[in-house]
Length: 251
Image (cartoon, rainbow, N blue to C red; front, side, top):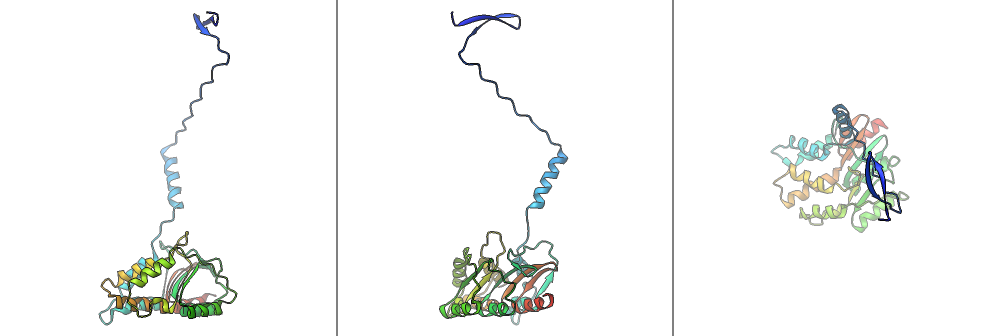
């Protein structure tokens, strides 16, 4: 065979074929790096610390409001808890993602109640934070007149959908939108609306509420406003009135 030669490999005569191209270089097997159990445990611990695991402040509010429930009348429990306001060390509660003053702020309230807070403390409000609004025309014009040059950022992540769901739980004659609803800030990094979670919170406090009673509860909640605020002192939870008093003491 003209295409083959005889050569000596390992001291044994071997017939090999002469190829026009050299044989491919065999792949180098990957080097397996073994880690000690201590190294693996350390890496997993870092992952755990980097993951933010926290409890919803709305679950906390519901739990606390339930302790206020009295027979005459039971519907004051949530309002009473928020009007008193509370500050606690933040061991595991989720904080808002919106910067305000020296902390982070979340607010849900009626338009009129929110404007009271804005008129007293307009400077710390950030235009980069989410501010979602649902209101009738007259109420909306009041907002525009007060904000003037405040170019707010409407995120609307499920906000309108959740407000509609909340409305369907009530039989308010003029709908809960008649007083306007404002949601400022967010509790999540994806800026998801919290209206649905607040509806679940109210249902947890008042599980047997009729649509008429639910209308009264959500109306009163929007009238006083719900605030979650985190700063170096801890977590503040309360109404807009109690939050305004807190701000006056720290600003």
